[in-house]
Length: 254
Image (tube, rainbow, N blue to C red; front, side, top):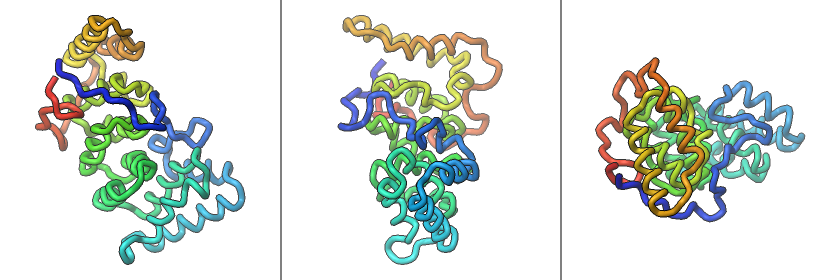
């Protein structure tokens, strides 16, 4: 198997990824916006809460672009300073949701934004894009070695829409870069009975063993899942963007 180049993670990024939660286990991609808003309202200080309320009102009142950059896009850049790094992702997701950002808008914010803003866009996808239209953003994130982006890229949106080939390579990318597979949404269902994923995991384990390197414990966890009897298809029932994509996260075939 020719595997993606496991270059070092982006400086400053943790090798196990970052759940980017609001400090106590709330995950923006998995938490309904109304609940996320209630949580932040309870845990932010007075000034931060007032800033968030104003940012959400602005986004709801002027969801489109006004001038080169919309007002609510500027609020995305302020979120870390206003709400603190532990709750900034959740605040950005709420602003994107209030602005009713569609796939095109999310793509613009993603490509023009910082790594923090890109991560928030990935977290917002399951709340805002019902179909596979935003898969190019996920695929872009999976080509990086920024572990925080990778951890966000393998969330529920990917679980719903990545085809089997691309999803397998996303799991392997997590193993290559040290992102905990706990970040991979719906891992048990999609890995269940997946013989091709088992083969790829076995090849990778053999490579590491032959090189005198340890095999990640997460690899054994995923391999055990593939040995379970399938009870449902491991891939989306309807082909989505990326179905004909022949290569893995770095453009190499397995």
